[in-house]
Length: 208
Image 1 (cartoon, rainbow, N blue to C red):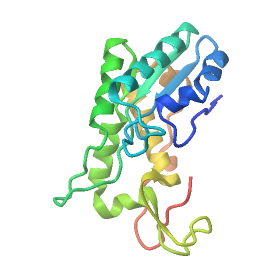
Image 2: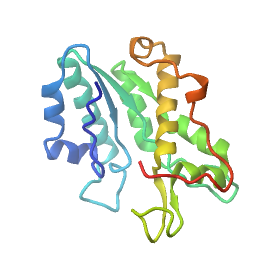
Image 3: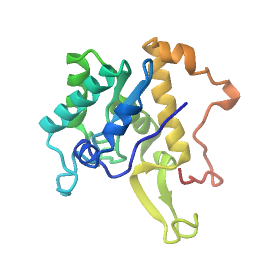
């Protein structure tokens, strides 16, 4: 059973302030896994309603980890997924450096399984390049989708294809780390079910 308690636009600070974390803790059962990923909103210094300094972000992650473990659950940390920002030389920019580093530091100090999704997703987007990587994100021309009649050029949020590709990165990394979760609960996809990046005029992203 997957119980998704994520809420868009929240940082570690606001997730706690809005009392969204405590119900997660109360619902945990021994043997549960808790996937914890923040960073995008924490680092939004231009939005004081959500901004969380790196040191406070680190302390909040520690709180999540220790309280999950107090319920005999297993926390798994993930660094924030890359944004689709390229420099003039065509290299993907690292926009999460401080927050990814804080996540990795907490994982090391507290011996928490971590998926460095920042690194993995940057590598994937870099491999696809500036143009093709748009197929993973909410890049829509006017009239492409009824939810966005004026179109949309969003380099942070994914369409369904992009979301599936990110999920594949997580599953592959958990398998590579030989986690019991991966061995017991994550079925190996058949080749025919693998999600490929489409090409050509027929390739149109969809909303998540």
